[in-house]
Image (cartoon, rainbow, N blue to C red; front, top):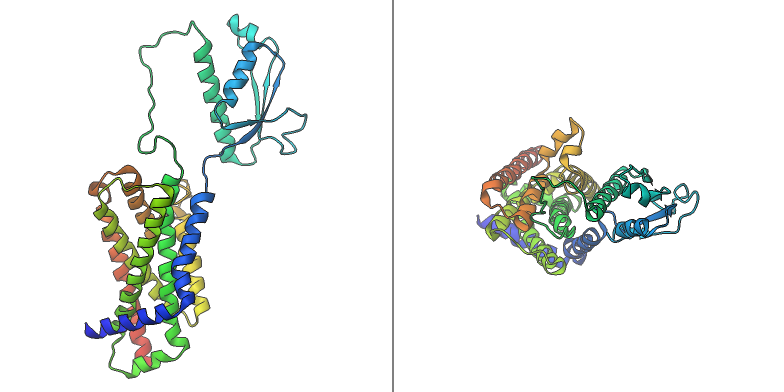
Length: 363
């Protein structure tokens, strides 16, 4: 144990002296948090919409006002071909005798043309106009049939539809997976490039003690990273913890342990720092970004690629963070996550130990 602690102290001293590594550990993650926290938006807003009103009555104008009152659409003057040129995202055409047909209970079709280049946004526009139209009709029609059953819709967990409440807890998983693993991989492969690993082979320090010393050092650095990132984001985006803080602590520690072990694996396998950085940043980032449910729901990923998401540790940590910061259901729904992440950490450590032991004997 003393050798492991000595190795850990040596690694922390080297980390502190390397200013570039310190920047990579703390400054870049904060920049990534700001970019993702403010730039990623899943709900389209400020949609350019033009209206052509052939009826031009107080009734049709009130319908138009109701559409723009949603604050989802921005009024743009109607021009022929505006949709083709991309000047507007949707156009609404109100037919003649719109109000007269309504008063006479005669169906009157309103034509809505939507730019379908972006399928998701087109669906949002379609649903928004449909919902506004239905609400407008229910508001102005006095002789609506009285239903015995009436739906009362409520939004739980995030009633204000605050997007940062969904995005930022997911950003934690991406940042705390990429940067701790990258730092660990760089530190491990540096031993090979500088030739200091030969001294380790010649000493009585075992491969397991070397790995655990480096792992412990960068696990401490990862804890510092997590503390800074989560504290900064909580204050900046006003995202308080709604669940037991022990759940966040336990899940974060196990996730960081897996991230550092993942970085050790690439550090042991890579021959230079370029390969270590590319391996952890590309493979680690893409899997955490695309296959974890951070932005794209896992249910939307086609089979069998969706099965790969079960092997992505960031998926489990995102479930935990969104529960801690949004849902607050407690240990009953996330109890298995620290166990899974700890198993991932032990798996990578075991592989690293076997690889390094073979290298030590072969050299």
